[in-house]
Amino acid sequence: GFWGGPGCSSVAYGAAQELGPFLVRSYGENLTLNAYSWNKAVNLLFLEAPVGVGFSYTNRTSDLRRLGDRVTAQDSYSFLLNWLNKFPEFKNRDFYIAGESYAGHYVPQLAELIYDGNKGASRDRVINIKGFMQIGNAVLNDATDQMGMVEYAWSHAIISDELYSAVRRECDSFKEEEDGGKPSKGCSPAVRAFLRAYDDIDIYSIYTPTCLSSSSSSPASASPRRSSPGLVAAPRLFSKHVKEAWRRMQRVPAGYDPCTEEYVKGYFNREDVQRALHANRTGLSYPYSPCSEAISKWNDSPSTVLPILKKLMGAGLRIWVYSGDTDGRVPVTSTRYSLNTMKLRPRLMRKTAGDGAGEESEWGGWRAWYDRQQVGGWAVEYEEGLTLVTVRGAGHQVPLFAPRRSLAMLYHFLRGSSLPASRSR
Image 1: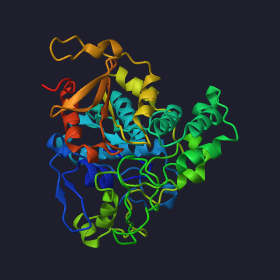
Image 2: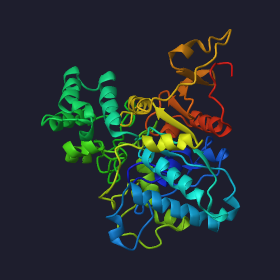
Image 3: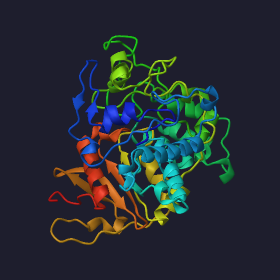
C-alpha cells in the first residue's frame, strides 16, 4: 500500500491509523486491535516510498534531491522484485496495489511498470498483478482536481459566491497553459483567499473537530497545530501561483478522534517502540514524522495520470477508485470531473421489480450502495473495467472514518462483485 504526500508514511497512516491489524488510538502505551483490518482478507505490505519517508533512509543526501514520481515508481518496482525473491512463497499469489491521496500517482505508475516489465521478464521476475483497488480520494488530473476543490468549497458553504466566481474567472478555471489557460495576476490572491477559508477547519474532513494539541504541548493546548507538512502536494497551478500559501496549509489529522496523527507521531518516536520494530538502527538525525520533513524537493509530477488508467483498463486490470465525501482536499467533485474526462461508458442497471433497484439506470448507472441496510455511499460501474465508489460521511482517510464499509468494499473488489444495490442484500 502507498499513502499520500509526496512524503507521507504508509505505516503512520495506513497501518497505524486506518487499516492495519493494530491501531494507535491514544497517547498511552497500548495498541487497539482493529476489528476491520484489511488483513482479514489479504496479506498486507506497507511500503515507505520514496526514500526518506518514515524510517527509510539513504546514505547519500543527494538521493533526497532527485526524488519525484519517476524515481518513486522505479525504486518501488525494484523493491518488489527483491522482496519477492526474498519471500518466494508469495510469487504466485495474486497481487493488488492500493493507496490513498497522492498515491493516485504512485499506484498507477507502479502498476504500469509492473505490467510493462512482465512482458519480457523471465518467469521468476513476473509479478502476478491483477488490478488495484486504486486509491481513496485520489490525485488524478490537476485541472479538474483543482476546479473540483473550489466547487466543493462553494457548494458546502465554505467560500462566498464572490470568491468562487473570482477564482474561476482569475484562474481561467485552472486550465493548463498548454490547453489555452490564461490565469491573470488576480489568480494568486484569489487562491490565497480560498486557502484561508480552511484555516480553522480540517480541509481533509470538513465536519469533524480539529486537534488542539501538539507534540510540544499537552492534549489541552489551545490552538490548532500547524507544524506538519501538507498531506497532498500542491498541483502545478496552485504551486505556481501561491507556493508559500500552500506550504503553510496544515495537515490537520482526520477521524473521529482528530488527534490520531499526534498519537502516532508520539508512538513511533518512542525508543522502546523503535527497538521492538528494529527501526531507526542508523540513528536518524531528525525525529520520526508521519510526513517526512527530509523531503523538500519533488522533481517531476505529471499533470495527469488518466492515460495510464486507460492503458491498464485496456490491459484488463480491475480498478476501483473510492472517495470519502466529506474531504475538501481531493473531494468527490474533483474525482468525478477527472474521471468524466475519460468519457467512460456507465454500465446501466437492469430494471428489477419490487425494490426499485434499477430505476436510475437511465441516469448513467449512478446508484446507492448499502451496508447494514443503510446507504453506505453511491457507486457507478463502467464498461471499461473501472468502478467509482463514494463513501458517505467519510473524510480523506476512508478506512479511518468507515472501517467496516472500507473492508466491505475490499471484499467485493476481490470477488469482482458489485456492492449491494438494495437494503435486502
